[in-house]
Image (cartoon, rainbow, N blue to C red; front, side, top):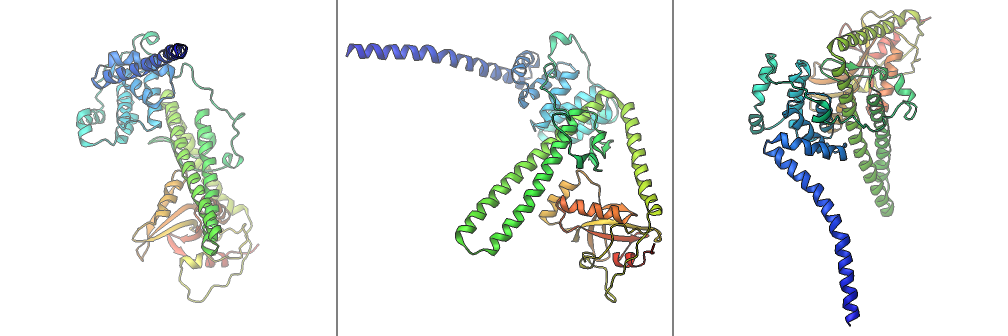
Length: 444
């Protein structure tokens, strides 16, 4: 019996010896974090900063550490790369909403007025939070271009550690090839209040380019899943076999979960790409950005001019289309499968443009499905809307004099989820029948 007790005592001793050092290490980390957060909440940012500096060196990807670290730097009047990068990293992962406010403070201190106003407007805190932060005061000063901050860079080597000091390896096109379809795609992707990209080649930050490509790929995967899910739902409706219905339900649920995750990933990639690219232009300066905006505008004008000139270079093929007598222009009539050659142009039709209609809603009451579609498409494309004589709000994309380009856009939008997309024609701003336009096209 005594031997058993000795063994038990030895086991307890070894367990305690092995366990307590591990617990103490964990407690040390947790204790440091708790102490730093306590300093932060008490407004003692000077004491909080060195602790968060150590914590972020251990976990540079931790969003909350980035938040605490960035705000602590800012409160210590440090307005340098580390402050901006920490706060931008925090914003991407949706840390406390006042992170936008502190980013606005950062740009405000550096008198980058446009970026400061942009982030002040992004802040969506409650009235109580706004009063605590003196939001209205800072917003008013920014509007009047008054800088209340004391910018002191101090000794960058000892006061703060740049979060980019040991950055993770960034992907490049060799390890993450850009899809060929994306290389030639024309889209609308807003970087900031002044700058909108139309091509993947517009990206200056390699990391931002890859992030945007990942979002693009996620969009394509999601669209494929949505189409497949629709097929599964139809099969579920048509079968009466209980076992088959149960199996289909499980596949539908799995597909919806995949779709949800892809959409979350896509939104995160888009936001990260936007933040990275905006950071590039913040470093480069307003003059360089203004020059690039002009470059994009010139390219856009050249593209529009090319589209307009194409109708003069391409021969027109006649098409005979039967049009029902006295048939009014309706959504169903525009959706007819017309036997039209894709090369048809409208060179003889002055002031005629083609648009792709993606939705029509009485009094503008949108369906939930269209709201989702609109949110997705509007990230890439400019969507126009107008109200017709019957009080329907019509949503369209594109503005072409060239039938072929309009048809290509329509097909692309269908692939992007606008299943009911169809072409609509306008002359001098008034809706006319596609059939009549094509019927009156001149022959070779």
